[in-house]
Length: 159
Image (cartoon, rainbow, N blue to C red; front, side, top):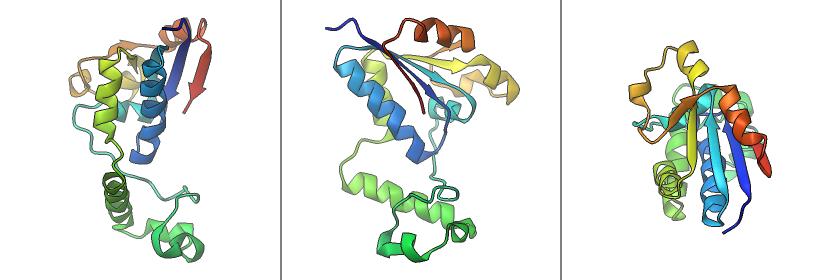
């Protein structure tokens, strides 16, 4: 067991952006780190009981696409109606076919590993979110709560 600690601020609520904070947190926790995750703005979507995440190919030109579509399909083409649903389905199929854990499974791993998860109270108030829609295993707090953890942490990441 190590005395090292890590904090992560999760600000994105899409399927593709859900993986980095949960993978890094579950891995660090498995290595014995004390881990705190702070979910703010769109990152609060990752704490919902009902995870219905999608990818956002628009504005993500680095997203690999099948059939070399990334070479000939302009980024604006991803704004075509139905394209986001198609890309989400493709991403979910790829995740499943490669045996990668789902976001819900990774989140459960973090919970089992005692990763501290904090939902941003200001964002909840700002967007009129209902805290009852969020998983029970979290705390609510603000920037000061996050900074209390980050101030003594060895690693602080913003995702």
